[in-house]
Image (cartoon, rainbow, N blue to C red; front, side, top):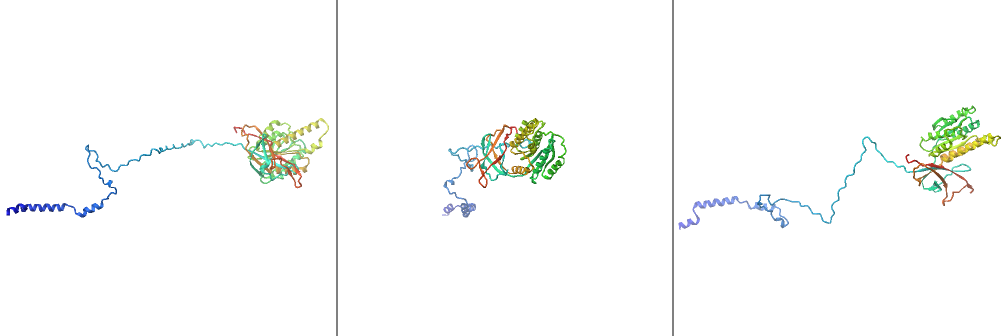
Amino acid sequence: MTTSCTSRHGSPRTRLLLFFAALAALLLLPPASAQNDAQQSSPQPANPQQQQQPDQSQPDAGGPSGDTGVIAVPKKAPEDQPPPAAAAPPEPKITNPADLPPVSLHIDVPEVTVDVGVLLQKTGQFVPGLRPENFRVYEDGVEQKIEGFKRVEAPITALLLCEYAARGFAFRVDMLNSAWAFTQQLRPQDYVALMTFDMKPHIEVDFTQDKRQIQEAISELGMSVYMPAAFSETNVFDALYESMDRLDRIQGQKYIILIASGIDSMSKLTFDKILKRVKESRDITIYAVSTGGLLREMTEGGPGMGASIREMDYLQADNEMRTFAQITGGMWFEPKFTGELPDMVRTINQNIRAKYQLVYRPTNAKQDGTYRKLRVELVDAEGQPLRMQDEKHKPLKYEIIARDGYRAKQEVE
C-alpha cells in the first residue's frame, strides 16, 4: 500500500518543486484590473475595416517593413475642367534716365475766341440781354457750333498811340483833347501806357494803373503844343508795328487807341506789310481816331492842284485807319468838334468793357497758317435776322463789332 501511494503523489521533493513553480507563475501574471484598464483606454475604430492590423511581416529582401505610415495621394482633376490659366507677366516699369527730367506730351486742340460788341447806331449804347442762340458765327462761309458763351466786362490793357509832329497846330490839339477825354473813362484796375510818334516812336509813360501819370504826361505835351515840333514826318506804319510787338509780350486782350492824322510820310514798312501784321494779331484790337477833322472840313474844296492832292491823301489815310479798326474788331471815328469827344470816348469805353465772348472749335482744324474770314450775325428764335424796337415799337438799327478774321496757327508753333 505504501509503495502505491508514493508513486501517485511523488516524493516530497517533487511536491516542493511543483509548489514553487506554481508560485512563480502567479507572480508573473498581470492583475486582471490592469488588463481591463488597458482594454478601455485604447480607442476603438468606428469602422470595422479600420481594425485590420498592418502587415508586420518582414520582406525577404530585407527592405522596409510593410507599415509605411500615412500616405497623401493627390486628387485627380476632372477631365471636363479646363487647366488653370497661366499668370500674366508683370508690367514693365519704365523710368527716365537720371539726367533726363520728366517728359509730358501736350496736344493743342484748335479753339477760337471771338469778342462781339453789339451797339445801337444812334446812341452807341451796348445792347444787353442777348443769348447764345441769337448768335451765328461763320468761318470762311461755314457755320460753326458755339460751345462757349458769356458776357465779359473786365479791366482793360490799352496803349495810347498818339501822333505828335509838326503837321499842324490843329492836329496836335485834337490829339491832346482826344487822349485827355479817354483818360477820364479809366478805372483804377486799368493798365494804360502813352506813346507818341513822329519820325520815331517815343514812350512817354509805361504801363501803369495810375491814370494821373498819363494825365500829367498829356499836360506836359500840352504846354509845348504852341511850340514847333521837331519833325514833320508821321511814320504811323512803323509806330503801329512797334506798338504791336510790345503788346505781344503781354498776356490777354489788349487795345491800341490810335489817335493820328493817319498820313504816313516815310515809314520803312509799306501798307501791305503793316496790313499783314495787323491781320496776324490775335488778341489786339485797334480803335482809330482821325485828327484834324475841323481843319479839313474848312479847307475842303480849296483852289489849286495842291488842295486836291492833300484831300486825296487824307481820304486815303482815313481808309487805312478804318481798315486797321475793322480787321481787329475795333471802331473808327472822325470827330470834327471838341463836343463830340465825350460821346466818342464813351462809345469806345462801352465797346471795350462790355462784350459777348463766343468760343468755338473750327470745323477746319488744319494748322496751316492760312487766314480765315469771320462773320457774325444776330438771329431770332426762328433763325431770321434779329430786329430790335424801342419802347414806341420803332425799329432800332444796331452794329455788330467783331474781328474780320484771324490767322490760324502754324503746325510748328
